[in-house]
View 1 (cartoon, rainbow, N blue to C red):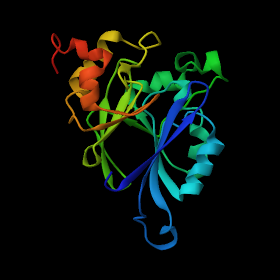
View 2: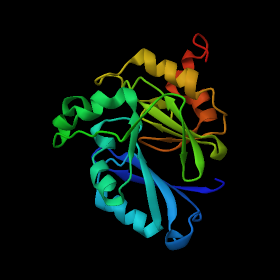
View 3: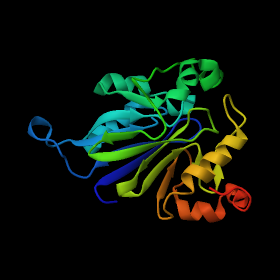
View 4: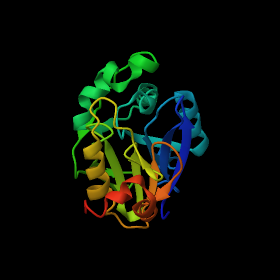
Amino acid sequence: MKDLTIECCVLGMVSTNCYIVYRKESIEQGKHQDLKPGVIIDPGDNAPFILNKCRELAVEPEAILLTHGHFDHIMAVEDIRRTFHIPVLAGEKEMELLEEPDMNLSANYEEPMSVAADRWLTDGETLELIGKKWNVIHTPGHTAGCLCFYIEEEGVLFSGDTLFQESVGRTDLPTASPGEIIDSVMRKLFVLPEETKVYPGHGGRSTIGHEQKYNIIARYRGRRRP
């Protein structure tokens, strides 16, 4: 990694990866010069732990990014948004799922909850966060509004529940589609450089090159080319 550090916090009942991504050094001047700017991705549970980790690391988050709206990726959103007064960014096609407890599954597993993003993102957008360009990639399949976030300069992809180590996300939940997740992985993720590091929503990290060879989707390469 050139300028960024990635802290992975495994949280909640289904071991969701929450990422605190931050600069190795502060880029601020004045009273905040000792704090390192950061981004929180998928704060799925245990807001006190995440907040304490930010204090430990001297990180001042400037945004919350959501790869999708399932309950295990959003349960700590409101506490973190309120504490740091920062915006929540999510895919525009995830609006209904985020706001509807029956669709985001919080009605089934936890207290019903809904989240409204401060900004709705579209495929191909570029975000300017913590001094880096984040490419927004819409990858429907696990849900209709799933997003991945790609920092080309750092060679890093946050793949949410679209792409796992040698697997992909479930496609039997509201707004999911097996065909779409295959297309998303093949046409939008497998075209990234092989050395790209993949940080998924669950499980261990990987690389695009490894997944091109060993992912369950790889067998489709012969008949469905990117």
